[in-house]
Image 1 (cartoon, rainbow, N blue to C red):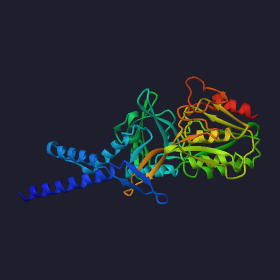
Image 2: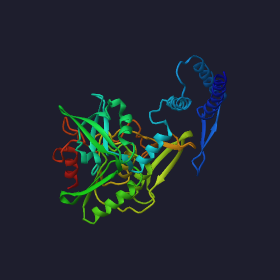
Image 3: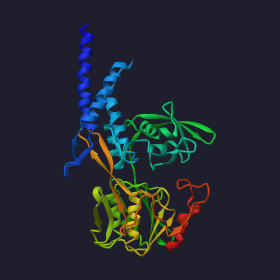
Image 4: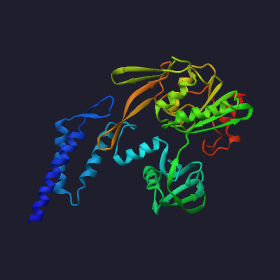
Length: 397
């Protein structure tokens, strides 16, 4: 009897707490970003709180199993933000936030492999192992299909779950089943801290500098600057910047790179926030890169990559864009940190090129349109067969 009474008291307390938390967090229709400390101010509405209270009471009365209030709260917040119907806005749990912050700094614990969902086959395909990574050491190759992780099967639609399963704790080992053509391989790979190098550079024929930027994560500008100085010391006479399959990242990193190729005080970016408030970002330093430049782009060049390409192209007559029309992501997301370690990512700005051209759902059309050979992809094409790169080299000569 005492036990049942205690349970009823416990459930009542949890109901009150859950309702208060939902009212406090989920019903945060108006959120003000306090400058300087990144805190969030919540203004709640009663109607939604009452609705969730009614649902909670109904579930308590009817549901047969155990109720995990914390999991329900987390799911409710995720669903609430998902109701915006904006593919880029989302609630990020504490665990997801930690993983996200690791990735944006270019360091994380895992096996070091780029993977994607092959939507045609609903399989997880290896785009490429990172250089010097445990995945490369274990023999994982571009085109491999990851079918199982620790004995559990994963489909392409479960990409994020598979990615999390590959990361886990440093020093532990993970068993991966690979499908390579008709062959099934089982590999054991140790998880280690992986440092992602976002910029690769080399000198091609005819003193052409070549730099590939894979993402604009934290530190990308410093990495770019260092690689540029190395190329400059080798007396390059023209410059190819490869942004193919670069889906973007931190806008400020791309802007700082653009600043090196544009005259001081020239417009680099125009952003528009809520209520049509526009802000203009201008170049702050003297131009340090003054060579003929070719940008290589494709349909997966997006966001910060498009910002960089447009900023330099519209301020520099000595720039050529080669490849295919870019993705067309002309909106910017801001991540706000919440006090419990979780976060919320919201679309907060639309951006325009220096000439006030729209990018969103339009993209950037190349000066010279070049497709890769049929059946080839950016990750698998041999350099000699890379028609886009070969055209860039031809123009750079």
